[in-house]
Image 1 (cartoon, rainbow, N blue to C red):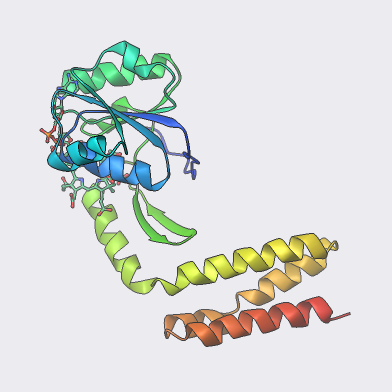
Image 2 (cartoon, rainbow, N blue to C red):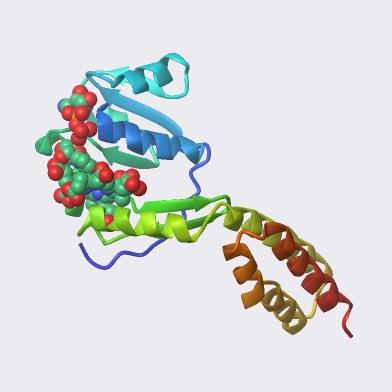
Length: 215
Ligand SMILES: C[C@@]1(CC(=O)O)c2cc3[nH]c(cc4nc(cc5[nH]c(cc(n2)[C@H]1CCC(=O)O)[C@@](C)(CC(=O)O)[C@@H]5CCC(=O)O)C(CC(=O)O)=C4CCC(=O)O)c(CCC(=O)O)c3CC(=O)O
Ligand SMILES: NC(=O)C1=CN([C@@H]2O[C@H](COP(=O)(O)OP(=O)(O)OC[C@H]3O[C@@H](n4cnc5c(N)ncnc54)[C@H](O)[C@@H]3O)[C@@H](O)[C@H]2O)C=CC1
């Protein structure tokens, strides 16, 4: 595949189809549900986990083999069966309809890969090797998980609130930019790395008030 263009896709409420109901399908479905996608699954059988989700109405399930009509009204597709020829067909028919499609066992057939992700609230760090080594992506993710703890999610949320406030109140773009830059200085990051969340927050809030009240 050519060099990939990374994006953060909003899936809330969007119909997404997963073809196949095995272990890999289950992992992909969990990450789709975490983004509030509307998930439909088509497969002759489901893992126990997926069965439970279907019974609770968290996912829509059609028991059976894939057929092209399954793509109707769909925004994004994951071809996750254990049969190459089925996955290839799903990819081809999805691409004919200009859909987003991920193929779990033969990446170049689809048009997107799923990266490994470190999630910290609104902050997400995605690692992709353009399909070359999922295991390397996973290893790097594990390193980053140690380096960027849950406090970064809290910081991202706090900065989001402050920024929204600033965008509403400060018209001068240069001034706005200066305040935003002052919020995330080295000291704030050092405090966070040391687990001093409260002190880091205080520093951010002080920098904000100082920046806003300066002439
Ligand atoms: C191309 C891609 C397609 C896609 O988008 O699915 C793909 C393809 C394949 N994966 C395979 C195997 C494994 N995949 C993992 C794990 C993950 N795989 C993920 C993504 C991707 N995997 C996409 C590329 C991402 C990139 O650009 O780097 C992660 C990051 C995200 C996720 O899937 O949610 C998730 C990390 C989970 C986490 O966050 O920890 C592990 C390790 C493990 O399970 O621990 C193994 C076993 C070790 C190994 O083989 O390396 C095989 C061979 C299958 C076989 O042997 O039959 C293929 C097929 C092939 O490459 O041909
Ligand atoms: N992308 C990734 O991260 C990884 C990909 N893989 C690859 O993913 C594939 C799937 O792996 P698993 O989930 O472990 O396999 P699995 O054997 O557990 O599940 C396969 C599923 O596909 C369904 N299926 C078969 N034919 C179908 C059809 N015509 N229509 C609809 N559903 C159909 C089966 O009912 C079953 O639910 C394998 O080819 C494997 O090589 C494996 C590990 C990681």
